[in-house]
Length: 330
Image (cartoon, rainbow, N blue to C red; front, side, top):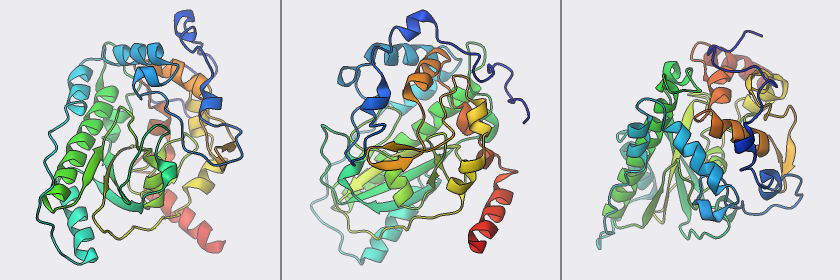
């Protein structure tokens, strides 16, 4: 396998956290995330929720401070945390066929910075413990990375290209989700936005998969058939009646079973080669205790999604065609 494109990345297994970073990982995150649990349950609040809601608040603060050392990253992320005002719900509700309302949502989102849109029925399993969402629908927005900038992760104090692109996509997610929520409210329906990078009530990857935006990759991130793993998510929940988009199986899961690119590229060795039981579902899982210290120390990461073969624009069409043939033979 070829060496990683970014020479600043240490080889897998050669990185160890600094003692002051390791000391902040006071408890293991894997049991809190439900590793080994055979019964489905809602996820517990974790990293990027408010620091007082989980055991790693101090480590989260260090991670945020380190990521802001990169040139331009403060401005990029500040835009993600600049939340527009939510408008009041119009007293006059638009009466239209559900097909027209669904098309209106999709068209508005795509014309307001979203690169893809999926719709799924709300499932209580998508909501973190301690939170409540009463809306029956989840709209998930996909924001695609600039691949050339993403390849530069992790960034450092001289090069903020990669982490700035992460911030830029989260910023688009903030604007897109708030714009869509306000548009739905203008139609007389309830709607709430859920952008990143801070975590809120809504878990985004499961409804994104249910809505057909992609499959879960070995690196724990969504793999989109259009953008690979180079994609960020934002969500909007609503009571507007909508038509769901259907899940799509295009071979990413089967490919990940044999691919070792992200596993080998991960400096702390956090990506495991086999699926694990997590909150009652056998799925890909990234070792929290290995991943997060590197993430905090390296001014954020993203190596796994940048190196993922599905993310490479020149490779993805060939992968789609190959996996389509294999799935067809099955």
